[in-house]
Amino acid sequence: MNYFRKMKKELFEELKTSLLELSHIGSAMALLHWDQEVYMPKNGAEFRAKTLANLAGIMHEKFVSKEFEKLLKQISKLEKNNELNKNETIIFSEIWRQFSREKKLPLEFVRDLTETCSNAQSVWAEARKKSDFKIFLPFLEKIVELKRKEAELVGFEDSPYDALLDEYEPQMTSQEVSIIFYELKEFLVDFLKKIKKSKIKINPTILNGKFETEKQKKFNEFVIGKMGFDFGCGRLDTSTHPFSTSFNPEDTRITTSYDEKNLFYSLSSAIHETGHALYEQGLLSENFGTPLGESISHGIHESQSRIWEKIVGQNINFWKYFYPKLKKEFSQPFEKISLEEFYKNINYVKPSLIRTESDEVTYNLHIILRFEIEKDLIEGTIEAKDLPKIWNSKMKEYLGVNVPNDASGILQDVHWSGGSIGYFPTYALGNLYSAQIFDAAKKDILNLEKEFALGNFEHFREWLRNKIHIHGKTFSANGLIKEITGEELNSKYFIDYITDKYKNIYEL
Image 1 (spheres, rainbow, N blue to C red):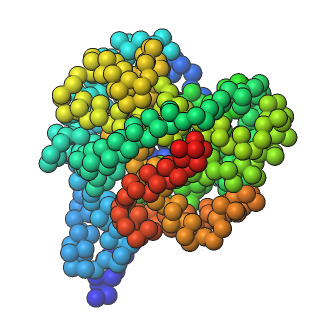
Image 2 (cartoon, rainbow, N blue to C red):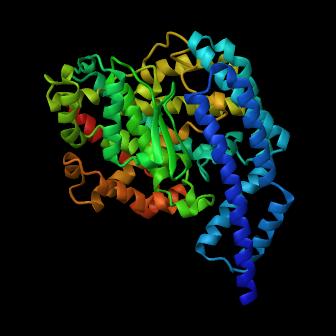
Image 3 (cartoon, rainbow, N blue to C red):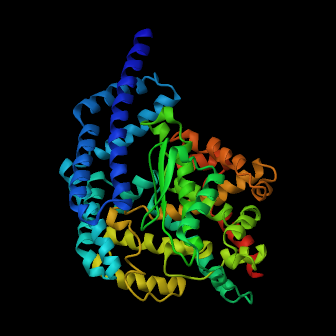
């Protein structure tokens, strides 16, 4: 027995050393991606793409090397003999799952995909700026071709899309997503019609004004600081497309973008990205490099950003605390707007062109549209050249919106240029998770929303940290939801949340 314990200790020390090396390479790549979006000059794109491609190749080679495979197989023998404890089993099982997938991808494929996507992002930015999908089309066609190939290499049972979805939401299938989204779409389309018929008229333009960027930055920093963002372990910067990234729990970066006429253009994004960052800062540093130091899934990650941005950040109790401070910093136009009127206006519902600017009621319809398109694209029932027409048709059908140009339509999101096909469903899943999680938090924390009104967010943040963040990949997404709420994912919680909130606002 002592021999097995000694062998296990040596093998796991070797495994953790290897995983730490891989994580450091991943952190370097994440830093280069962050720099590409925040500071890199335009002409650096081609060289950056090659640098990232080489690093991706090095990381892939190390991860699927014969030496690493031999190490995993030695540990697998211990696992079969029940020699591993709970945490060791979690680490080994998740690494084996990732290894088995990565092993199926040839090195040249990994390099080709990374370089193609890195180059595609600058081309996408140019195409969006010129509102011309044709500029981006050749790159999108190659990315789709490569992602179809990836699905074939990885393998799947029912749909090639499942192989891509699994990267972002492990153990979830497109069939399960389709069933959940069908119910959600039916509810949202019908509920949206009821809101449109409401006699309550809201005019959010009264919130517009002239907001200096520097003053916005300071107010954003104040808000996210109160939420618990640790500036000693992170920073807030500016980018065209707001995002969050983490190199380790002690270095987490978020970005937002600014509109001097609309304060909430930056503030909503800052709160959203802080939700992501709090998850990353809540992971235990001692577990860095292992699955116990990683988030569960993109859907669970998104639940953390949406719970802060929407359920908390657009809650009237949140603004009972922040609104007096907002009025002090920006007396115009807020001085003459009551808290109740302000609350209704920030929760204004109107179908819009842009996903990131959409309200809680219509947001998921934007996601469902994208999911349906990319699933059909990967399954080969539609082709990339037809996407603008398909996109515009679905926008009209689901949201009643006419799309005027490519920039406001098919080109508005960065995901496809980065090869993130299979990512979009996690946004809507995140909304569903968030409502179910918040319902559990209200049961556990007495007078939770009253605490928000007093500017106390620590209790809620620590609840999230203890229930979700610190566990890493101890649970699957559905397993975590069941652990926290007593049942698996159920869209009822989100539907009830939306119904109760907006019935009150629109007096339905």
